Length: 173
Image 1: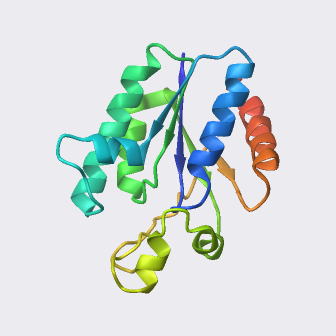
Image 2: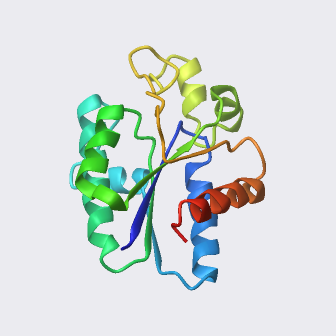
Protein backbone atom coordinates (compact mmCIF):
# COMPACT_ATOMS: atom_id res chain seq x y z
CA UNK A 1 0.00 0.00 0.00
CA UNK A 2 1.31 3.43 -0.88
CA UNK A 3 1.49 6.10 1.80
CA UNK A 4 0.41 9.71 1.62
CA UNK A 5 2.35 11.93 4.00
CA UNK A 6 0.42 15.16 4.54
CA UNK A 7 2.79 17.90 5.75
CA UNK A 8 0.82 20.59 7.60
CA UNK A 9 2.08 23.71 9.37
CA UNK A 10 2.27 27.46 9.16
CA UNK A 11 3.59 29.26 6.10
CA UNK A 12 7.38 29.18 6.38
CA UNK A 13 7.40 26.26 8.81
CA UNK A 14 9.49 24.12 6.47
CA UNK A 15 6.81 21.80 5.04
CA UNK A 16 7.90 21.93 1.41
CA UNK A 17 11.61 21.95 2.28
CA UNK A 18 11.19 18.80 4.39
CA UNK A 19 8.95 17.13 1.81
CA UNK A 20 11.56 17.75 -0.92
CA UNK A 21 14.38 16.45 1.28
CA UNK A 22 12.34 13.37 2.20
CA UNK A 23 11.57 12.78 -1.47
CA UNK A 24 15.30 12.74 -2.23
CA UNK A 25 15.97 10.33 0.65
CA UNK A 26 13.13 8.00 -0.32
CA UNK A 27 14.21 7.97 -3.98
CA UNK A 28 17.73 7.08 -2.86
CA UNK A 29 16.08 4.05 -1.19
CA UNK A 30 14.54 3.12 -4.55
CA UNK A 31 11.05 4.33 -3.69
CA UNK A 32 8.79 5.95 -6.28
CA UNK A 33 7.73 9.30 -4.88
CA UNK A 34 5.49 12.17 -5.98
CA UNK A 35 5.34 15.64 -4.44
CA UNK A 36 2.09 17.63 -4.39
CA UNK A 37 2.47 21.28 -3.33
CA UNK A 38 -0.57 23.18 -2.09
CA UNK A 39 0.60 26.47 -3.60
CA UNK A 40 1.03 24.90 -7.04
CA UNK A 41 -2.44 23.34 -6.98
CA UNK A 42 -4.02 26.60 -5.75
CA UNK A 43 -2.39 28.63 -8.53
CA UNK A 44 -3.04 26.13 -11.33
CA UNK A 45 -6.73 25.55 -10.57
CA UNK A 46 -9.12 26.56 -13.37
CA UNK A 47 -10.24 29.43 -11.16
CA UNK A 48 -7.22 30.35 -9.02
CA UNK A 49 -8.00 29.79 -5.36
CA UNK A 50 -7.24 32.31 -2.63
CA UNK A 51 -7.24 32.04 1.13
CA UNK A 52 -10.93 32.33 1.98
CA UNK A 53 -12.31 29.53 4.15
CA UNK A 54 -14.17 28.12 1.15
CA UNK A 55 -11.11 28.30 -1.14
CA UNK A 56 -8.97 26.57 1.48
CA UNK A 57 -11.57 23.81 1.78
CA UNK A 58 -11.64 23.39 -2.03
CA UNK A 59 -7.85 23.38 -2.26
CA UNK A 60 -7.53 20.73 0.45
CA UNK A 61 -10.13 18.58 -1.29
CA UNK A 62 -8.26 18.94 -4.62
CA UNK A 63 -4.99 18.01 -2.91
CA UNK A 64 -6.53 14.90 -1.36
CA UNK A 65 -8.09 13.80 -4.65
CA UNK A 66 -4.82 14.39 -6.52
CA UNK A 67 -2.84 12.51 -3.87
CA UNK A 68 -5.27 9.60 -4.08
CA UNK A 69 -4.86 9.43 -7.87
CA UNK A 70 -1.08 9.63 -7.65
CA UNK A 71 -0.93 6.96 -4.95
CA UNK A 72 -1.78 4.34 -7.58
CA UNK A 73 1.59 4.89 -9.28
CA UNK A 74 3.81 5.80 -6.33
CA UNK A 75 5.12 4.25 -3.14
CA UNK A 76 4.80 7.63 -1.44
CA UNK A 77 2.91 10.82 -2.20
CA UNK A 78 4.11 13.81 -0.18
CA UNK A 79 1.58 16.63 0.18
CA UNK A 80 2.77 20.01 1.42
CA UNK A 81 -0.02 22.39 2.44
CA UNK A 82 -0.82 24.71 5.33
CA UNK A 83 -4.15 22.88 5.83
CA UNK A 84 -5.02 25.15 8.75
CA UNK A 85 -8.40 23.65 9.64
CA UNK A 86 -8.86 20.41 11.59
CA UNK A 87 -12.07 19.68 9.68
CA UNK A 88 -10.27 19.72 6.32
CA UNK A 89 -7.49 17.48 7.62
CA UNK A 90 -10.12 15.08 9.00
CA UNK A 91 -11.89 15.06 5.63
CA UNK A 92 -8.60 14.28 3.88
CA UNK A 93 -7.94 11.46 6.35
CA UNK A 94 -11.45 10.08 5.74
CA UNK A 95 -10.99 10.17 1.95
CA UNK A 96 -7.48 8.70 1.98
CA UNK A 97 -7.99 6.17 4.77
CA UNK A 98 -5.01 4.21 6.06
CA UNK A 99 -2.76 5.77 3.42
CA UNK A 100 -2.97 9.17 5.18
CA UNK A 101 -0.12 10.01 7.54
CA UNK A 102 -0.35 13.49 9.08
CA UNK A 103 3.04 15.16 9.58
CA UNK A 104 2.77 18.30 11.68
CA UNK A 105 5.72 20.61 11.02
CA UNK A 106 5.56 22.35 14.39
CA UNK A 107 7.63 25.49 13.95
CA UNK A 108 6.99 28.52 16.20
CA UNK A 109 5.31 31.49 14.54
CA UNK A 110 8.29 33.69 15.47
CA UNK A 111 10.62 31.51 13.36
CA UNK A 112 8.14 31.43 10.46
CA UNK A 113 7.97 35.24 10.60
CA UNK A 114 11.80 35.43 10.53
CA UNK A 115 11.93 33.15 7.49
CA UNK A 116 8.98 34.80 5.68
CA UNK A 117 10.00 33.17 2.38
CA UNK A 118 6.93 34.41 0.51
CA UNK A 119 6.71 37.85 2.13
CA UNK A 120 3.29 37.01 3.57
CA UNK A 121 4.07 37.91 7.18
CA UNK A 122 5.44 41.31 6.09
CA UNK A 123 2.14 41.94 4.28
CA UNK A 124 0.27 40.85 7.40
CA UNK A 125 2.25 43.24 9.60
CA UNK A 126 1.49 46.08 7.18
CA UNK A 127 -2.21 45.21 7.32
CA UNK A 128 -2.36 44.31 3.62
CA UNK A 129 -3.78 40.86 4.28
CA UNK A 130 -4.77 38.55 7.11
CA UNK A 131 -2.27 35.75 7.54
CA UNK A 132 -3.18 32.28 8.74
CA UNK A 133 -1.86 31.90 12.27
CA UNK A 134 -1.45 35.66 12.87
CA UNK A 135 -5.10 36.64 13.00
CA UNK A 136 -8.14 35.53 15.01
CA UNK A 137 -10.07 35.53 11.72
CA UNK A 138 -7.50 33.18 10.11
CA UNK A 139 -6.49 30.68 12.80
CA UNK A 140 -4.18 27.74 12.35
CA UNK A 141 -5.81 24.88 14.25
CA UNK A 142 -2.84 22.90 15.53
CA UNK A 143 -3.23 19.15 15.06
CA UNK A 144 -4.05 17.54 18.39
CA UNK A 145 -2.87 14.05 17.48
CA UNK A 146 -0.72 14.10 14.34
CA UNK A 147 0.80 10.80 13.27
CA UNK A 148 4.23 12.45 13.27
CA UNK A 149 5.32 15.77 14.80
CA UNK A 150 8.52 17.41 13.55
CA UNK A 151 10.05 20.65 14.75
CA UNK A 152 11.81 22.35 11.87
CA UNK A 153 13.72 24.67 14.19
CA UNK A 154 16.82 22.57 13.61
CA UNK A 155 18.66 21.89 10.37
CA UNK A 156 16.90 20.16 7.49
CA UNK A 157 19.29 17.22 7.92
CA UNK A 158 18.38 16.77 11.61
CA UNK A 159 14.67 17.15 10.87
CA UNK A 160 14.85 14.52 8.12
CA UNK A 161 16.75 12.14 10.42
CA UNK A 162 14.02 12.52 13.04
CA UNK A 163 11.31 12.06 10.42
CA UNK A 164 13.08 8.97 9.02
CA UNK A 165 13.33 7.50 12.54
CA UNK A 166 9.61 8.13 13.14
CA UNK A 167 8.73 6.56 9.79
CA UNK A 168 10.80 3.46 10.61
CA UNK A 169 9.16 3.18 14.04
CA UNK A 170 5.74 3.27 12.37
CA UNK A 171 6.90 0.72 9.77
CA UNK A 172 6.27 3.12 6.90
CA UNK A 173 9.68 2.32 5.39
